Image 1 (spheres, rainbow, N blue to C red):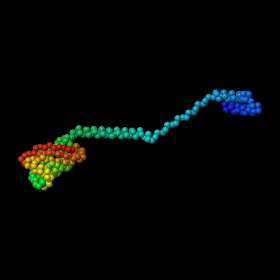
Image 2 (image 1 turned 180 degrees about the vertical axis):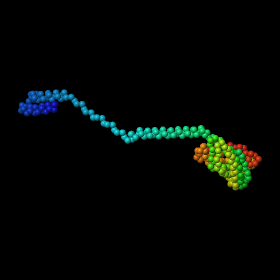
Image 3 (image 1 turned 90 degrees about the horizontal axis):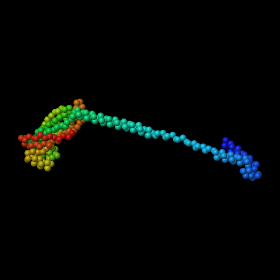
Image 4 (image 1 turned 120 degrees about the vertical axis):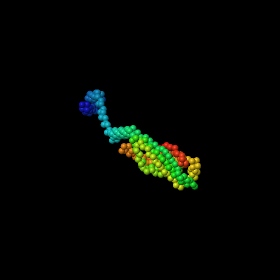
Amino acid sequence: MQEMKRTKCSNDDEKGRGKENNNNNNILHSPSLLSCYITTTFIVMHKQPTAPTMAPPPPPPPPQQGQAARPRHSKLLRLFAIIILALIVLVGLAVLIIWLVVKPRGLVYVIEDGSIHGFSLSNNHLNATFDFALRAYNPNRKVSIYYDTMEVLVTYEDQNLASNGVQPFHQPHRNVTRLDVKLTAQSLLLSGPVSKDLQHDRSSGKVDLEVQVKARIRFKVGTWKSKHRTLRVFCFPVVHFSPHKDLERTFCEIDL
């Protein structure tokens, strides 16, 4: 409507101007131009401003692949951690129950007797026979032991003098096994200081020796057998050269 009025006024204006061009009158002397001017001014002044059109908000960006997989990944890690923790608890309970039922006790080794025969030391060469009686005690009520290999060694001042093996055997629970071991040194070359100290101990009538036992063993509980483990025994007997003096019982140290 406003556009039509403006066009009409514009046409009237052109006609008025054509008629009044010769007279060079002012716009105030032209009633049509004055009326058009007033009408146009009134319409412009009362025109309501139109509200600006608001663009709709942009849609949220789609979730990225990494963000969508992160919650699932966290759930898997949490589930895995719970399973591992449950397994640890179950294994701990199983070990505790087995320990309470079996009640394992340490092995006991004692040297009950020992002697030296045929001792001869000349030009740092040693000839001697060492006899030892070892007492192995298994105090466990439900655990038996398999001795698959065993070696006994006698040393003096960290030098090996003689060694010998023991036949494999099985030791039942709450059992005492006596092992008679004979160790022989034949023309064994000793270092100068060791030979001198051993000759001095021979003169005193007794000698401090170290007897070592190394064994590969397995434990048996019911029908279950453990893996191989290494048993080490360290004994420090004082042996007399005179056959008329008995050796005092010597308790050994156990390393298992």
